[in-house]
Image (cartoon, rainbow, N blue to C red):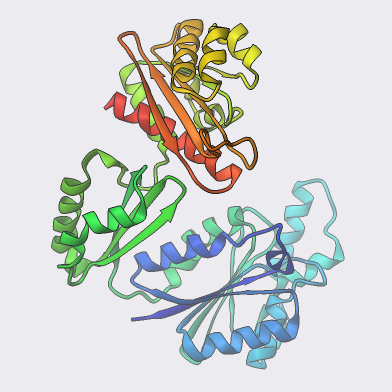
Length: 404
């Protein structure tokens, strides 16, 4: 199997403010070509560190992909590091320089002299055009290795890789991936449920990944194991049934939106502890105006009574975080918006505010339609952000099951 290594370059990636997402995209692309990623490295903008990282990659990998460090500033050192490691010179590419100058002219500006370094190409390499930025990519073969230098911004890297990088890549047998996204089940339970499938796999690789309030199951197989992949996928569907909410990377909010749109239905939401996160997730989907009426954040008891007609004596008797209040909130927002469905969330997101009777993580979710109102109680764990996200995931999943 061809082995690949990804080197993410940039001191900002070693700070707590930026994360490397390019490697996730590139890993998926490489796996689909049957190429295994054996290592990922993050390196700051330091020439010696970059040269060392390239040397390590050359020892253990057949394909090396570097992202970042191709800009015009003094700390953009990726080309310099490659030339220093391979002991080769860089040459000015006049045609490349003319293209960069033309790009600046199109924006009504003169090219700064510093951008001239982006037209420097390691000897023996070819340039990869960048239609979305000023930093050309670089491709070079040396000692049987394939080296790709790609820009850091994902909106530049991804189209460059798709159009110019992939066609140059030496490929193994192509792989197929099947992804199942499962809502509101713990990782250990999903793994246990799938043992009849996973214990008998031969050429299909199985991976289970946990995220807040959802699990991803990945099945990866080479072309010659397509029949086994189809069979294993069918078994997963039979075992998990409606716990599976998507068989690709579709999000819960996108799926729920699609189901609402198909049925010509509309939803309105009332939130307390999630503070508008549920409405934000729903409206992040383009075209959500076709099925989303309104979102109301009623954080105080007074707002619940005034805006959603939750009876004050109900709150006084049972508390704002309770099944009766969640029921009244769902019914109130549905009636207010004249929507087909009313969805409500009330809970304690923490880290403070919990009691022995009502601990942090206690959440009630209500779903109302013209026939009845259903309320579910949940106990989530983790940080405030995780509890809030899990609450919205549970609410969307409750609506999904209702629509199915």
